[in-house]
Length: 328
Image 1 (tube, rainbow, N blue to C red):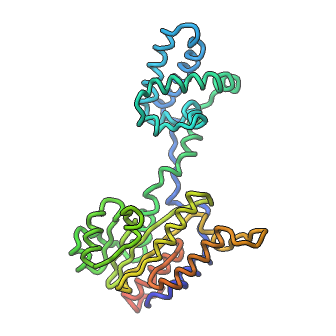
Image 2 (cartoon, rainbow, N blue to C red; image 1 turned 180 degrees about the vertical axis):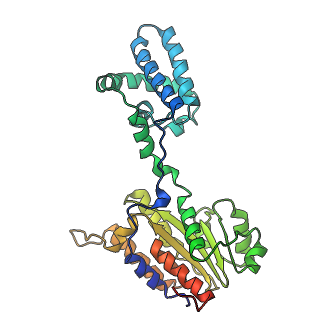
């Protein structure tokens, strides 16, 4: 079975929403039972309470306490998942930025003074719990899922088509029927060589500061260049990501068998299925995004915009085209 019209895969994606829970984006790691971490957290709390008490009474003792607090903050893995470091956001500072700044001890001293003034008595009255450590870690898991989408695409391809090899050279891409590379995860130079060898413009990369796509699949006479996003909810950064996906499929190569695929999973995709109408009848951002996707697909017929189910259907049709007698 040959590939169908790109709007077919878009429409079938719209009929099959993304699941609320996707195993590829579950990161269920427990850190609250890490005895060494909890020991450090509890010691940090003791030191901060002491520091707040003596800071105005004995500068020498306060300085020694500050040294130990500084040592814990700068050497303890996952210490950022504490109520003290969470407070830094109130001061418009993050732990990751703190680690890059000079004069860290002076900065920490200023943070401690603010913490003593704004939070110490409140937390003393409310009490401390190590559940906070786990809760803050869980809250930050979305930032740890950078490669989950690429792993998901790879698994979908291999579960549908088979255990395909990774190309090691342009010659592999040229002469092997089915191979893949990961341009944004170690194969950038190979991808650039591929673009030159196959005379592919890849305008998106030039417009986006030489950004590499997430995945490249060569399947017999077809090449699929894939950009993937996992989005959960609307917002400024999410709108930027959607616009990138739309721009990604606004590319046309001389060879019609070069395809650009925008792959979107996560609950944001479900908002595109039936966008909520705005009260003033003007199209909201999600309505405009859906319209832009559909107009782009009509214009760039070699390209695709799919969710998980749509991508599966596309791969099933590819597999059937290799073996016309196989059932789907």
